Length: 495
Image 1 (cartoon, rainbow, N blue to C red):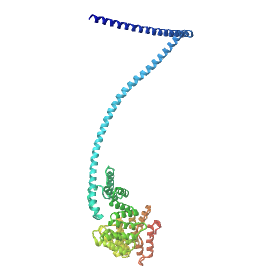
Image 2 (image 1 turned 30 degrees about the horizontal axis):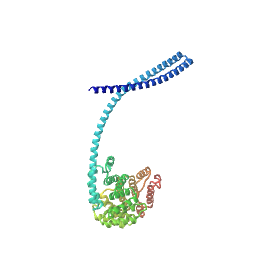
Image 3 (image 1 turned 180 degrees about the vertical axis):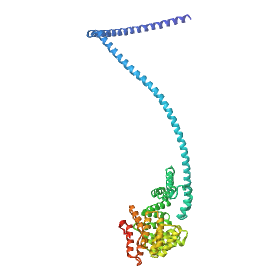
Image 4 (image 1 turned 60 degrees about the vertical axis):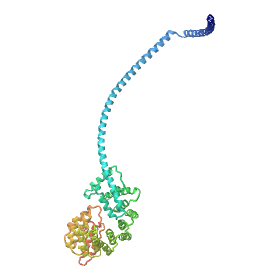
Protein backbone atom coordinates (compact mmCIF):
# COMPACT_ATOMS: atom_id res chain seq x y z
CA UNK A 1 0.00 0.00 0.00
CA UNK A 2 2.91 2.30 0.91
CA UNK A 3 4.64 1.37 -2.26
CA UNK A 4 1.69 2.41 -4.34
CA UNK A 5 1.47 5.82 -2.66
CA UNK A 6 5.10 6.59 -3.45
CA UNK A 7 4.64 5.59 -7.05
CA UNK A 8 1.63 7.88 -7.44
CA UNK A 9 3.47 10.77 -5.81
CA UNK A 10 6.42 10.27 -8.15
CA UNK A 11 4.22 10.24 -11.25
CA UNK A 12 2.42 13.38 -10.09
CA UNK A 13 5.73 15.23 -9.63
CA UNK A 14 6.90 14.21 -13.07
CA UNK A 15 3.58 15.40 -14.60
CA UNK A 16 3.81 18.74 -12.71
CA UNK A 17 7.35 19.36 -13.94
CA UNK A 18 6.28 18.68 -17.52
CA UNK A 19 3.42 21.18 -17.24
CA UNK A 20 5.66 23.81 -15.64
CA UNK A 21 8.25 23.42 -18.35
CA UNK A 22 5.57 23.80 -20.96
CA UNK A 23 4.26 26.97 -19.32
CA UNK A 24 7.72 28.48 -19.24
CA UNK A 25 8.19 27.84 -22.91
CA UNK A 26 4.87 29.48 -23.70
CA UNK A 27 5.72 32.43 -21.49
CA UNK A 28 8.94 32.99 -23.35
CA UNK A 29 7.09 32.90 -26.68
CA UNK A 30 4.55 35.42 -25.42
CA UNK A 31 7.31 37.75 -24.16
CA UNK A 32 8.99 37.56 -27.54
CA UNK A 33 5.72 38.33 -29.30
CA UNK A 34 4.93 41.21 -26.96
CA UNK A 35 8.39 42.64 -27.50
CA UNK A 36 7.82 42.60 -31.26
CA UNK A 37 4.39 44.27 -30.90
CA UNK A 38 5.91 46.88 -28.54
CA UNK A 39 8.54 47.65 -31.08
CA UNK A 40 5.97 48.01 -33.87
CA UNK A 41 3.75 50.21 -31.74
CA UNK A 42 6.71 52.37 -30.86
CA UNK A 43 7.46 52.86 -34.54
CA UNK A 44 3.83 53.79 -35.28
CA UNK A 45 3.84 56.32 -32.43
CA UNK A 46 6.98 57.87 -33.78
CA UNK A 47 5.35 58.11 -37.22
CA UNK A 48 2.27 59.77 -35.78
CA UNK A 49 4.42 62.18 -33.83
CA UNK A 50 6.23 63.19 -37.00
CA UNK A 51 2.86 63.75 -38.78
CA UNK A 52 1.58 65.87 -35.85
CA UNK A 53 4.70 67.94 -35.97
CA UNK A 54 4.10 68.59 -39.66
CA UNK A 55 0.48 69.55 -39.05
CA UNK A 56 1.48 71.95 -36.26
CA UNK A 57 3.94 73.61 -38.60
CA UNK A 58 1.37 74.00 -41.49
CA UNK A 59 -1.80 75.22 -39.65
CA UNK A 60 -3.30 76.74 -36.55
CA UNK A 61 -5.36 74.08 -34.72
CA UNK A 62 -7.61 76.67 -33.08
CA UNK A 63 -8.74 78.11 -36.43
CA UNK A 64 -9.24 74.65 -37.81
CA UNK A 65 -11.43 73.77 -34.87
CA UNK A 66 -13.53 76.94 -35.33
CA UNK A 67 -14.12 76.20 -38.98
CA UNK A 68 -15.11 72.64 -38.14
CA UNK A 69 -17.50 73.89 -35.49
CA UNK A 70 -19.00 76.56 -37.86
CA UNK A 71 -19.73 74.01 -40.61
CA UNK A 72 -21.24 71.67 -38.11
CA UNK A 73 -23.53 74.41 -36.75
CA UNK A 74 -24.86 75.41 -40.22
CA UNK A 75 -25.37 71.81 -41.13
CA UNK A 76 -27.30 71.20 -37.95
CA UNK A 77 -29.51 74.25 -38.60
CA UNK A 78 -30.16 73.20 -42.23
CA UNK A 79 -30.88 69.62 -41.30
CA UNK A 80 -33.15 70.75 -38.50
CA UNK A 81 -35.14 73.01 -40.81
CA UNK A 82 -35.54 70.28 -43.43
CA UNK A 83 -36.49 67.78 -40.77
CA UNK A 84 -39.14 70.16 -39.40
CA UNK A 85 -40.68 70.71 -42.85
CA UNK A 86 -40.59 67.04 -43.74
CA UNK A 87 -42.03 66.04 -40.38
CA UNK A 88 -44.84 68.61 -40.73
CA UNK A 89 -45.60 67.37 -44.26
CA UNK A 90 -45.60 63.78 -43.12
CA UNK A 91 -47.95 64.59 -40.26
CA UNK A 92 -50.24 66.51 -42.68
CA UNK A 93 -50.28 63.67 -45.21
CA UNK A 94 -51.01 61.10 -42.54
CA UNK A 95 -53.88 63.24 -41.24
CA UNK A 96 -55.25 63.81 -44.77
CA UNK A 97 -55.09 60.10 -45.55
CA UNK A 98 -56.92 59.26 -42.34
CA UNK A 99 -59.70 61.76 -43.13
CA UNK A 100 -59.89 60.74 -46.84
CA UNK A 101 -59.92 57.09 -45.87
CA UNK A 102 -62.90 57.73 -43.61
CA UNK A 103 -64.76 59.61 -46.37
CA UNK A 104 -63.90 56.97 -48.96
CA UNK A 105 -65.16 54.25 -46.65
CA UNK A 106 -68.41 56.16 -46.25
CA UNK A 107 -68.74 56.60 -50.04
CA UNK A 108 -68.05 52.90 -50.58
CA UNK A 109 -70.81 51.98 -48.15
CA UNK A 110 -73.29 54.34 -49.91
CA UNK A 111 -72.27 53.11 -53.38
CA UNK A 112 -72.51 49.51 -52.26
CA UNK A 113 -76.03 50.16 -51.00
CA UNK A 114 -77.04 51.77 -54.32
CA UNK A 115 -75.46 48.93 -56.26
CA UNK A 116 -77.29 46.36 -54.18
CA UNK A 117 -80.58 48.20 -54.80
CA UNK A 118 -79.91 48.36 -58.56
CA UNK A 119 -78.80 44.75 -58.59
CA UNK A 120 -82.05 43.73 -56.94
CA UNK A 121 -84.00 45.66 -59.56
CA UNK A 122 -81.99 43.98 -62.29
CA UNK A 123 -82.69 40.60 -60.76
CA UNK A 124 -86.40 41.37 -60.77
CA UNK A 125 -86.28 42.54 -64.41
CA UNK A 126 -84.19 39.54 -65.40
CA UNK A 127 -86.66 37.21 -63.73
CA UNK A 128 -89.54 38.78 -65.67
CA UNK A 129 -87.53 38.76 -68.92
CA UNK A 130 -86.55 35.13 -68.49
CA UNK A 131 -90.16 34.27 -67.86
CA UNK A 132 -91.27 36.06 -71.06
CA UNK A 133 -88.39 34.60 -73.06
CA UNK A 134 -89.12 31.10 -71.81
CA UNK A 135 -92.78 31.48 -72.72
CA UNK A 136 -91.85 32.71 -76.18
CA UNK A 137 -89.24 29.98 -76.68
CA UNK A 138 -91.80 27.44 -75.63
CA UNK A 139 -94.22 28.74 -78.23
CA UNK A 140 -91.53 28.80 -80.91
CA UNK A 141 -90.47 25.27 -79.99
CA UNK A 142 -94.07 24.13 -80.31
CA UNK A 143 -94.27 25.88 -83.67
CA UNK A 144 -91.06 24.19 -84.83
CA UNK A 145 -92.42 20.79 -83.88
CA UNK A 146 -95.73 21.50 -85.55
CA UNK A 147 -94.16 22.70 -88.78
CA UNK A 148 -91.69 19.82 -88.74
CA UNK A 149 -94.45 17.28 -88.22
CA UNK A 150 -96.57 18.82 -90.93
CA UNK A 151 -93.63 18.95 -93.33
CA UNK A 152 -92.79 15.31 -92.68
CA UNK A 153 -96.34 14.04 -92.89
CA UNK A 154 -97.86 16.15 -95.63
CA UNK A 155 -95.29 17.84 -97.88
CA UNK A 156 -94.08 14.61 -99.44
CA UNK A 157 -97.64 13.35 -99.98
CA UNK A 158 -99.88 16.26 -100.94
CA UNK A 159 -99.96 19.21 -103.34
CA UNK A 160 -98.54 22.55 -102.26
CA UNK A 161 -101.91 24.23 -101.83
CA UNK A 162 -102.98 21.51 -99.36
CA UNK A 163 -99.63 21.77 -97.54
CA UNK A 164 -100.06 25.52 -97.28
CA UNK A 165 -103.55 25.08 -95.83
CA UNK A 166 -102.43 22.48 -93.29
CA UNK A 167 -99.38 24.52 -92.21
CA UNK A 168 -101.46 27.64 -91.72
CA UNK A 169 -104.07 25.75 -89.71
CA UNK A 170 -101.40 24.24 -87.46
CA UNK A 171 -99.43 27.42 -86.90
CA UNK A 172 -102.33 29.86 -86.64
CA UNK A 173 -102.42 29.91 -82.78
CA UNK A 174 -98.84 31.19 -82.63
CA UNK A 175 -99.01 33.73 -85.44
CA UNK A 176 -102.61 34.89 -85.12
CA UNK A 177 -101.53 38.23 -83.63
CA UNK A 178 -99.07 38.90 -86.44
CA UNK A 179 -101.15 37.99 -89.49
CA UNK A 180 -103.59 40.87 -89.84
CA UNK A 181 -105.54 42.63 -92.55
CA UNK A 182 -104.43 45.81 -94.26
CA UNK A 183 -105.94 48.12 -91.65
CA UNK A 184 -103.88 46.43 -88.92
CA UNK A 185 -100.67 46.16 -90.94
CA UNK A 186 -98.71 48.54 -88.68
CA UNK A 187 -99.58 46.43 -85.66
CA UNK A 188 -98.45 43.33 -87.52
CA UNK A 189 -95.12 44.96 -88.40
CA UNK A 190 -94.52 46.08 -84.80
CA UNK A 191 -95.21 42.57 -83.51
CA UNK A 192 -92.76 41.18 -86.01
CA UNK A 193 -90.08 43.60 -84.77
CA UNK A 194 -90.63 42.36 -81.23
CA UNK A 195 -90.24 38.75 -82.35
CA UNK A 196 -87.01 39.65 -84.16
CA UNK A 197 -85.63 41.34 -81.03
CA UNK A 198 -85.96 38.18 -78.92
CA UNK A 199 -82.93 35.93 -78.56
CA UNK A 200 -84.50 32.86 -80.10
CA UNK A 201 -83.01 29.84 -81.79
CA UNK A 202 -84.62 30.02 -85.22
CA UNK A 203 -85.03 26.95 -87.37
CA UNK A 204 -85.57 26.77 -91.16
CA UNK A 205 -89.30 26.24 -90.60
CA UNK A 206 -89.56 29.36 -88.45
CA UNK A 207 -87.61 31.44 -91.00
CA UNK A 208 -89.98 30.23 -93.75
CA UNK A 209 -93.07 31.05 -91.72
CA UNK A 210 -91.70 34.49 -90.85
CA UNK A 211 -90.83 35.07 -94.51
CA UNK A 212 -94.45 34.29 -95.45
CA UNK A 213 -95.67 36.90 -92.97
CA UNK A 214 -93.42 39.55 -94.55
CA UNK A 215 -94.67 38.37 -97.95
CA UNK A 216 -98.26 38.99 -96.84
CA UNK A 217 -97.25 42.41 -95.52
CA UNK A 218 -95.63 43.34 -98.85
CA UNK A 219 -92.16 43.66 -97.28
CA UNK A 220 -90.41 41.70 -100.02
CA UNK A 221 -86.81 42.46 -98.99
CA UNK A 222 -87.24 41.07 -95.47
CA UNK A 223 -89.28 38.22 -96.87
CA UNK A 224 -86.44 37.20 -99.20
CA UNK A 225 -83.89 37.66 -96.39
CA UNK A 226 -85.75 35.15 -94.20
CA UNK A 227 -86.11 32.65 -97.04
CA UNK A 228 -82.36 32.99 -97.73
CA UNK A 229 -81.56 32.21 -94.09
CA UNK A 230 -83.76 29.10 -94.26
CA UNK A 231 -81.96 27.99 -97.43
CA UNK A 232 -78.55 28.37 -95.75
CA UNK A 233 -79.32 25.44 -93.43
CA UNK A 234 -78.12 22.00 -94.56
CA UNK A 235 -80.47 20.06 -96.80
CA UNK A 236 -83.03 21.18 -99.35
CA UNK A 237 -85.97 23.37 -98.40
CA UNK A 238 -88.70 23.44 -101.04
CA UNK A 239 -90.90 26.00 -99.27
CA UNK A 240 -88.04 28.48 -98.79
CA UNK A 241 -87.02 28.29 -102.47
CA UNK A 242 -90.59 28.36 -103.82
CA UNK A 243 -91.70 31.32 -101.68
CA UNK A 244 -88.51 33.23 -102.46
CA UNK A 245 -89.49 32.79 -106.10
CA UNK A 246 -92.93 34.16 -105.27
CA UNK A 247 -91.38 37.20 -103.57
CA UNK A 248 -89.16 37.86 -106.60
CA UNK A 249 -92.22 37.36 -108.81
CA UNK A 250 -94.15 40.06 -106.95
CA UNK A 251 -91.14 42.38 -107.18
CA UNK A 252 -91.22 41.81 -110.97
CA UNK A 253 -87.75 40.26 -110.86
CA UNK A 254 -88.94 37.63 -113.29
CA UNK A 255 -85.58 36.03 -114.15
CA UNK A 256 -84.76 35.48 -110.46
CA UNK A 257 -88.28 34.15 -109.87
CA UNK A 258 -87.98 31.70 -112.77
CA UNK A 259 -84.65 30.43 -111.42
CA UNK A 260 -86.22 29.79 -108.01
CA UNK A 261 -89.26 28.05 -109.47
CA UNK A 262 -86.97 25.89 -111.65
CA UNK A 263 -84.94 24.95 -108.55
CA UNK A 264 -88.17 24.09 -106.76
CA UNK A 265 -89.14 21.81 -109.65
CA UNK A 266 -85.90 19.86 -109.19
CA UNK A 267 -87.00 19.10 -105.65
CA UNK A 268 -90.63 18.40 -106.59
CA UNK A 269 -90.92 17.68 -110.31
CA UNK A 270 -94.71 17.46 -110.18
CA UNK A 271 -95.38 20.66 -108.24
CA UNK A 272 -98.24 22.35 -110.12
CA UNK A 273 -97.77 25.86 -108.69
CA UNK A 274 -94.15 25.98 -109.88
CA UNK A 275 -95.19 25.25 -113.47
CA UNK A 276 -98.02 27.81 -113.35
CA UNK A 277 -95.83 30.55 -111.89
CA UNK A 278 -93.04 29.94 -114.41
CA UNK A 279 -95.61 30.32 -117.18
CA UNK A 280 -96.86 33.60 -115.69
CA UNK A 281 -93.29 34.95 -115.37
CA UNK A 282 -92.41 34.21 -119.00
CA UNK A 283 -95.54 36.07 -120.05
CA UNK A 284 -94.85 39.13 -117.89
CA UNK A 285 -91.16 39.47 -118.76
CA UNK A 286 -90.23 42.57 -120.71
CA UNK A 287 -89.49 40.49 -123.81
CA UNK A 288 -92.76 38.45 -123.41
CA UNK A 289 -91.94 34.83 -124.18
CA UNK A 290 -95.54 33.70 -124.78
CA UNK A 291 -94.58 30.32 -126.24
CA UNK A 292 -92.68 29.26 -123.10
CA UNK A 293 -95.54 30.62 -121.01
CA UNK A 294 -98.02 28.38 -122.82
CA UNK A 295 -95.62 25.41 -122.56
CA UNK A 296 -95.28 25.48 -118.77
CA UNK A 297 -98.96 26.24 -118.17
CA UNK A 298 -99.92 23.33 -120.41
CA UNK A 299 -97.53 21.05 -118.48
CA UNK A 300 -99.33 21.98 -115.27
CA UNK A 301 -102.72 21.19 -116.84
CA UNK A 302 -101.39 17.83 -118.09
CA UNK A 303 -100.37 16.95 -114.55
CA UNK A 304 -103.80 17.96 -113.24
CA UNK A 305 -106.59 18.63 -115.77
CA UNK A 306 -108.60 20.29 -112.98
CA UNK A 307 -105.92 22.80 -112.01
CA UNK A 308 -107.92 26.05 -112.25
CA UNK A 309 -105.00 28.46 -111.68
CA UNK A 310 -103.19 27.16 -114.77
CA UNK A 311 -106.34 27.56 -116.91
CA UNK A 312 -106.66 31.19 -115.81
CA UNK A 313 -103.02 32.01 -116.49
CA UNK A 314 -103.10 30.31 -119.88
CA UNK A 315 -106.30 32.23 -120.72
CA UNK A 316 -104.48 35.51 -120.00
CA UNK A 317 -101.51 34.46 -122.14
CA UNK A 318 -103.77 33.47 -125.05
CA UNK A 319 -105.50 36.87 -124.84
CA UNK A 320 -102.12 38.63 -124.97
CA UNK A 321 -101.37 36.55 -128.07
CA UNK A 322 -104.76 37.65 -129.51
CA UNK A 323 -105.95 34.07 -129.60
CA UNK A 324 -109.29 35.12 -128.15
CA UNK A 325 -111.20 31.86 -128.80
CA UNK A 326 -108.59 29.80 -126.93
CA UNK A 327 -108.57 32.35 -124.12
CA UNK A 328 -112.36 32.16 -123.76
CA UNK A 329 -112.27 28.35 -123.73
CA UNK A 330 -109.72 28.23 -120.87
CA UNK A 331 -111.64 30.79 -118.82
CA UNK A 332 -114.94 28.97 -119.36
CA UNK A 333 -113.24 25.72 -118.26
CA UNK A 334 -112.89 27.24 -114.77
CA UNK A 335 -116.60 28.13 -114.75
CA UNK A 336 -117.39 24.55 -115.71
CA UNK A 337 -115.05 22.94 -113.19
CA UNK A 338 -116.08 24.86 -110.08
CA UNK A 339 -118.74 27.53 -109.61
CA UNK A 340 -117.17 28.33 -106.22
CA UNK A 341 -113.63 28.57 -107.51
CA UNK A 342 -111.55 31.47 -106.13
CA UNK A 343 -110.50 32.08 -109.74
CA UNK A 344 -114.06 32.37 -111.07
CA UNK A 345 -114.31 36.17 -110.78
CA UNK A 346 -111.12 36.66 -112.78
CA UNK A 347 -112.29 34.06 -115.30
CA UNK A 348 -115.57 35.91 -115.90
CA UNK A 349 -113.67 39.16 -116.37
CA UNK A 350 -111.29 37.51 -118.87
CA UNK A 351 -114.23 36.18 -120.89
CA UNK A 352 -115.72 39.69 -121.03
CA UNK A 353 -112.39 41.14 -122.20
CA UNK A 354 -112.03 38.56 -124.94
CA UNK A 355 -115.56 39.06 -126.25
CA UNK A 356 -114.95 42.79 -126.27
CA UNK A 357 -111.76 42.30 -128.31
CA UNK A 358 -113.74 40.14 -130.76
CA UNK A 359 -116.43 42.84 -131.10
CA UNK A 360 -119.09 40.67 -129.45
CA UNK A 361 -120.26 43.38 -127.05
CA UNK A 362 -123.49 41.63 -126.04
CA UNK A 363 -121.51 38.67 -124.69
CA UNK A 364 -118.92 41.02 -123.16
CA UNK A 365 -121.67 42.90 -121.30
CA UNK A 366 -123.18 39.59 -120.14
CA UNK A 367 -119.97 38.38 -118.50
CA UNK A 368 -119.05 41.80 -117.05
CA UNK A 369 -122.47 41.89 -115.39
CA UNK A 370 -121.94 38.33 -114.06
CA UNK A 371 -118.63 39.47 -112.59
CA UNK A 372 -120.14 42.58 -111.00
CA UNK A 373 -123.12 40.65 -109.70
CA UNK A 374 -120.80 38.49 -107.61
CA UNK A 375 -118.60 41.38 -106.42
CA UNK A 376 -118.24 45.09 -107.28
CA UNK A 377 -115.03 45.80 -109.14
CA UNK A 378 -113.75 49.01 -110.73
CA UNK A 379 -112.01 47.31 -113.68
CA UNK A 380 -115.16 45.39 -114.61
CA UNK A 381 -117.24 48.57 -114.28
CA UNK A 382 -114.85 50.54 -116.54
CA UNK A 383 -114.90 47.87 -119.25
CA UNK A 384 -118.67 47.52 -118.97
CA UNK A 385 -119.09 51.29 -119.52
CA UNK A 386 -116.88 51.03 -122.62
CA UNK A 387 -118.88 48.04 -123.91
CA UNK A 388 -122.12 50.03 -123.51
CA UNK A 389 -120.56 52.94 -125.46
CA UNK A 390 -119.76 50.55 -128.30
CA UNK A 391 -123.35 49.27 -128.11
CA UNK A 392 -124.55 52.91 -128.38
CA UNK A 393 -126.37 52.43 -125.06
CA UNK A 394 -125.24 55.85 -123.79
CA UNK A 395 -127.51 56.01 -120.73
CA UNK A 396 -126.19 52.68 -119.45
CA UNK A 397 -122.65 53.76 -120.31
CA UNK A 398 -123.09 56.99 -118.30
CA UNK A 399 -124.47 55.01 -115.34
CA UNK A 400 -121.50 52.62 -115.22
CA UNK A 401 -118.96 55.39 -115.83
CA UNK A 402 -120.28 57.10 -112.68
CA UNK A 403 -120.37 53.75 -110.86
CA UNK A 404 -116.73 53.08 -111.75
CA UNK A 405 -115.78 56.54 -110.43
CA UNK A 406 -117.51 55.73 -107.12
CA UNK A 407 -115.57 52.45 -106.90
CA UNK A 408 -112.22 54.06 -107.79
CA UNK A 409 -109.50 54.42 -105.17
CA UNK A 410 -106.62 55.49 -107.46
CA UNK A 411 -106.00 58.56 -109.63
CA UNK A 412 -105.67 56.36 -112.69
CA UNK A 413 -109.12 54.77 -112.21
CA UNK A 414 -110.74 58.13 -111.43
CA UNK A 415 -109.25 59.68 -114.57
CA UNK A 416 -110.33 56.72 -116.73
CA UNK A 417 -113.84 56.91 -115.24
CA UNK A 418 -114.07 60.61 -116.14
CA UNK A 419 -112.69 59.89 -119.61
CA UNK A 420 -115.47 57.37 -120.32
CA UNK A 421 -118.07 59.72 -118.83
CA UNK A 422 -116.92 62.65 -121.03
CA UNK A 423 -116.88 60.34 -124.07
CA UNK A 424 -120.47 59.30 -123.30
CA UNK A 425 -121.56 62.92 -122.81
CA UNK A 426 -119.93 63.98 -126.10
CA UNK A 427 -121.61 61.14 -128.03
CA UNK A 428 -124.95 61.82 -126.31
CA UNK A 429 -124.79 65.59 -127.01
CA UNK A 430 -124.58 66.53 -123.32
CA UNK A 431 -122.58 69.23 -121.49
CA UNK A 432 -119.12 67.98 -120.41
CA UNK A 433 -117.27 71.16 -119.39
CA UNK A 434 -117.26 70.48 -115.62
CA UNK A 435 -115.97 66.91 -116.05
CA UNK A 436 -113.34 68.13 -118.52
CA UNK A 437 -112.08 70.74 -116.02
CA UNK A 438 -111.86 68.08 -113.31
CA UNK A 439 -109.92 65.62 -115.44
CA UNK A 440 -107.60 68.44 -116.59
CA UNK A 441 -106.84 69.46 -112.99
CA UNK A 442 -106.15 65.86 -111.98
CA UNK A 443 -103.72 65.34 -114.85
CA UNK A 444 -101.93 68.64 -114.05
CA UNK A 445 -101.57 67.65 -110.38
CA UNK A 446 -99.88 64.36 -111.23
CA UNK A 447 -96.18 64.48 -112.06
CA UNK A 448 -96.50 61.06 -113.68
CA UNK A 449 -99.58 59.38 -115.02
CA UNK A 450 -99.64 55.94 -116.62
CA UNK A 451 -102.60 54.39 -118.40
CA UNK A 452 -101.42 50.87 -117.39
CA UNK A 453 -102.35 48.52 -120.22
CA UNK A 454 -105.48 50.40 -121.18
CA UNK A 455 -106.00 50.14 -124.94
CA UNK A 456 -108.12 52.64 -126.83
CA UNK A 457 -108.23 50.50 -129.98
CA UNK A 458 -111.50 48.85 -129.04
CA UNK A 459 -113.20 52.16 -128.35
CA UNK A 460 -111.82 53.88 -131.47
CA UNK A 461 -112.96 50.91 -133.56
CA UNK A 462 -116.51 51.53 -132.34
CA UNK A 463 -116.35 55.20 -133.39
CA UNK A 464 -115.91 54.37 -137.08
CA UNK A 465 -119.64 53.71 -137.31
CA UNK A 466 -121.38 56.05 -139.78
CA UNK A 467 -123.94 56.94 -137.11
CA UNK A 468 -121.29 58.91 -135.21
CA UNK A 469 -120.38 62.32 -136.69
CA UNK A 470 -116.66 62.61 -137.58
CA UNK A 471 -116.25 65.79 -135.50
CA UNK A 472 -117.25 63.85 -132.36
CA UNK A 473 -114.75 61.13 -133.21
CA UNK A 474 -112.04 63.78 -133.59
CA UNK A 475 -113.03 65.32 -130.25
CA UNK A 476 -112.70 61.96 -128.51
CA UNK A 477 -109.30 61.41 -130.18
CA UNK A 478 -108.17 64.77 -128.72
CA UNK A 479 -109.47 63.61 -125.33
CA UNK A 480 -107.27 60.51 -125.65
CA UNK A 481 -104.33 62.77 -126.59
CA UNK A 482 -105.02 64.73 -123.41
CA UNK A 483 -104.77 61.55 -121.33
CA UNK A 484 -101.51 60.69 -123.05
CA UNK A 485 -100.27 64.24 -122.28
CA UNK A 486 -99.82 64.94 -125.99
CA UNK A 487 -101.85 68.14 -125.54
CA UNK A 488 -102.53 70.41 -122.57
CA UNK A 489 -105.99 70.78 -120.96
CA UNK A 490 -106.25 74.41 -122.12
CA UNK A 491 -105.76 73.27 -125.73
CA UNK A 492 -108.82 71.02 -125.58
CA UNK A 493 -111.81 72.63 -127.40
CA UNK A 494 -114.99 73.08 -125.35
CA UNK A 495 -118.32 73.45 -127.16
